[in-house]
Structure formats: structure tokens, C-alpha cells
Image (cartoon, rainbow, N blue to C red; front, top):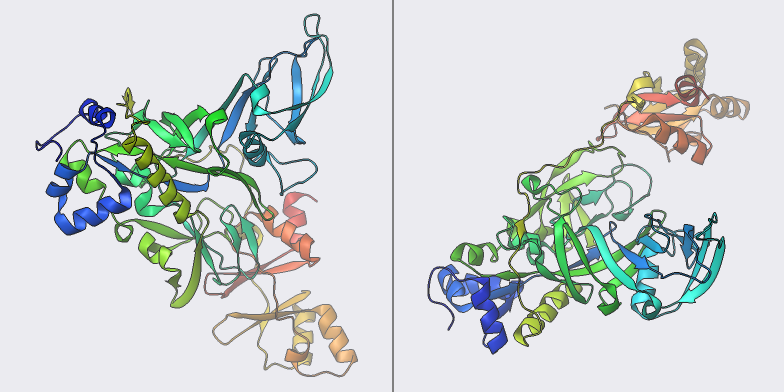
Length: 500
């Protein structure tokens, strides 16, 4: 039995770790204990709760010191396995980001894969060029390296362990490719990420034990929190962490390069944090369950910060495999691995129980009052709503001759076909009408295009312009969330505003 008092310290827990009598539960085990026996009993019986998450963490990378060549080179640009890396300053230091992509295998291989290959002990190719100076005369170098040849190979991740993610859907009529993976049209699928009740920041949301200097599980090795992550927004339950660790001691099982179709590359990172149960409040917090963790259902077909929010959903519902959106049953899948998140928490539990991992007290706590701000923009960009105009419409019951007369009297090239409640049904062009009349066709349903490419009013005009070019069309009906026609935007409208 552990400390019977109302508080305990990290130092007391570390003494138990070194003596081999520490009581450790994974986050899943702790939730079951609290549910069956209550918070007070859980506090008395448990010293540490281990958490874990495993998912794509794009703001990850590694600092590499190559050492000096002979004669030396002041590197200006460098490539590792044909992935161009960032060069932060000094002659032999590189930073490779997980999302940097290969120049030869674009979208298939990137910085995350290079880091995984190095961690696995594989040999990689370095190419570098410099401009030549008196003390760094060399202008080019090509060689092969492994992690054992590097002076430092430090994982340095600016934004990891996102507290939660949006549930992503697509209301448009086209497939879209995002960092939330492939989203099928008309709400035919949904995706989410994050470990929910296993996530470290969900188990200590007030950062009582998590802060600068906290020792963590990182990539299969040990690492540290060095501050709040970028876009840290704890007021919105969107906290993040900035972390580092010795990548030479990590394993490819918990650091895996990834590629997202038509989006780019990333890296899956395994991260776990031990939560010392210093008081009953922490015992209660670590009992949080998926049914208590909610996130937003966001329509990613609108490429703007103010994407439509379709409601709240719990992680319990997300993990069930199906959710309901607008009275429609939608299949939902996770982009992160719950199995690997559990393995992270279980591995960390083993390390602590065996005495190879002790806890640290943060030297500085993370901020709890910051809110993520969007980029300041000093130049206005046009949106579809700025140029769209009323659409000339018809119904499928109208005769082709009547529609032809409307094209002439209204001086338009596109007629949008709508239902009686103004929902989009199709589109016809002046060319369609001309051909139909020449061939003696009278029914609109025989000539209208039913697979209509559309636009949303609040999307950037440039996106709409690219869509027209991609599909070789000259107009897009503008629709709302209910597929009701709001107007139309044409290539002529775009050319006038964008000047091309």
C-alpha cells in the first residue's frame, strides 16, 4: 500500500521506483480502477499513471551535426536521400523536417522517412553544396552516412501530442485530399486522430505535472518537454508540446515516416508521459473517459480557417466506427493507432516498474491561458462570394426551346438546373442546347450534366479558378450546405478580378 496521506511528492515516488515497490497503472487501467473503487482508493493505491499517443505529428524533425569534411565545406544547401533539408546556420549543422519531400519520390518519401531510416541504422546519402570561402574552400560533397557517423542526431519536435483533433468531413461533390487523409464527397466518410482518453494532455489538462523538463517516452527512447508547442491553445483544449530527445537511442517502431496521398509526408511519433498521482485531484483527472472528451465535426471542403462546424462529437462515438451527420450514418476511421498508443503507455509502465525510468519535476509550468491566433494578413484576398452573381435557372420539366430562349434573352452560356426547392440537379451550356436542338431532342434530362462541379461562397476565388482549370470547365454553380443554388461564378468573372 502506498502513501495514505492526501498528497505525495515526485521525490517520494522516485524512491519507490528505485526500491522496486512503485505502483504503476496505464491510463486505461486507472480508469477501470476509479470506476470500480472510486477516486480515494485509486489515489491510495496508485503512484503513477502512464499515458500514450501515436499519430502523425507534422511539426517534427531532427537536428543533425555532420562534423567537418576535409577540406571543410560551409554548407549552403543539402539533401539527405534526395530530401532537401533546412540549414539553420553553422557550417555542418542541418535540420530535417518531417514534411520536407523527396525531389525524386514526391509525396511518397520525405523527411520523416529519412529520420526513420537513420534511426533504423540504415545508410543514407548526403549531398551538399557551398559557395566556398577562404576557410571553407570546398563547394560540393557527396557521401553516405549512418547515425553512428553523426556527432548529434537529436529529435526536435516543435508541435507534438496535440490534445485533440477535429473530426474531418467533406460536404462537396468531389474527393479532397488533406492532412486528415482522403475525404470522400457528400459525407461518405469521416476521419479523426488522437488517442482520446489515453492522450497525456487529457490526463493532466491543467499541467500540474507536465512542464519544461518533464521526462517522457519519445520515439521508443527517453526525451524531455522543452516548452509549450507551437499553436498551444489550452483554453480551447488544444494544448501541444515542444519536445526533444536523442534519436540515436530511439526505435523505428515508434518513429515511422508517413505519406498522405496528394497532400505530403509526415512522421508518426510515439509519445508518452508519466503522470505522478500527487493528490486526489490528479487521480480524478486521470479517470477521464472518451465519453467526456468532445471535438468538432469540421467540413474540410472549405479551405478557410472559418470552416463550417457541424457540431460536437465524443471520442467514444468516434472510436465506435460510425457517427451521425445530418441524420446520415457515416463511417469514421482513425488516422492514429490506438494499439500503438496502448503500447507506448505499457512500455513506459514497464520502464518505471523496472526502475530504468524515474520522474522529474517541471522546472517551469506550461501556460494555461494562451489562445492560438491566426496569421495577420495585410492584403485582402477575393472569395467566391465577391464575384458570384445570380444564376439563371430552369427545371427538368421545361422544354429545351424555352431554355434556349432564356440563354439568348439573358445573354448567358450556362443554365443551372434546379429542383422545385432550388436544390442543384444539373447544368446545361449553350453548346448543349444548340446540339440538342440540332439533333431534335426535347427532354432536358437527355442533355444536362448531372455530375456538377461546384463552389462554396466562402472559399478563395483562386481555389475555384484552379477547379475550373482542372476540370476544363468555364463556370461553377455556387451552393450552400443544403445544396441549394446561391449563384454562379464563371471563368470570365475570375479573369476580370484576378487580372488574367
